[in-house]
Length: 90
Image 1: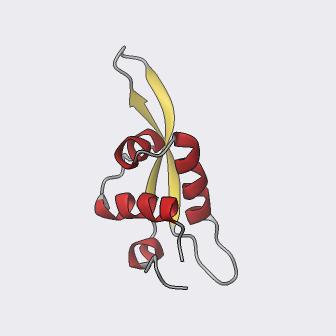
Image 2: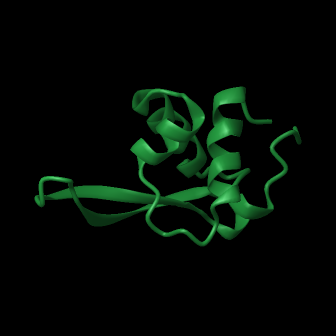
């Protein structure tokens, strides 16, 4: 069972499945969480154990900022297991 913040992050990622350019900032802005909170939630979703697969992954990329400079970022998306996850299941 996911905690409320993780559920909000998961829901945003699920609602935007197929968008391969989602960043921590995007999720924070959409959910009202801080980037630090979002990062913690994403880390939890990425963590695989013997009993559960990873539900999210990050892909390195670059974005162009408003001033024209490039910034290294990591894009976040759900795995197939993450898309199929029931966030209320034990």
